Image (cartoon, rainbow, N blue to C red; front, side):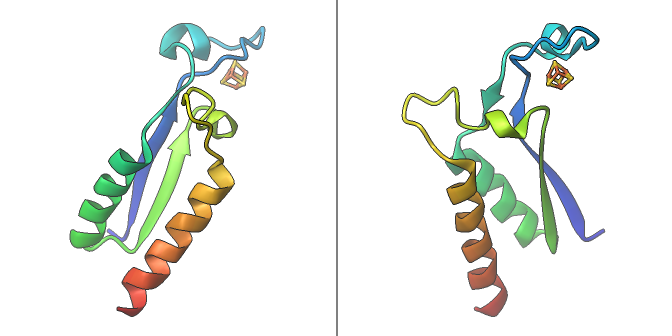
Length: 88
Ligand code: SF4
């Protein structure tokens, strides 16, 4: 297996009328970057070549952090991380 899935966010704050997710999963919560990167590093060590970041509402990633973060910059950081890991 070469592809791994890493959940970086759970829950949702939108309460769309047809959806049970906010009731079943609760409010949106984001995992800390350090925690995510630790899991990804372990997956890379285990031989995974591709990591898919998943969540219920990825657009809400970081909204629950006191210090605001931007998912876009996080993805750029991950991209650079993997380029570095691939060529070193
Ligand atoms: S998970 Fe999607 S469909 Fe469900 S409440 Fe949130 S935004 Fe709406």
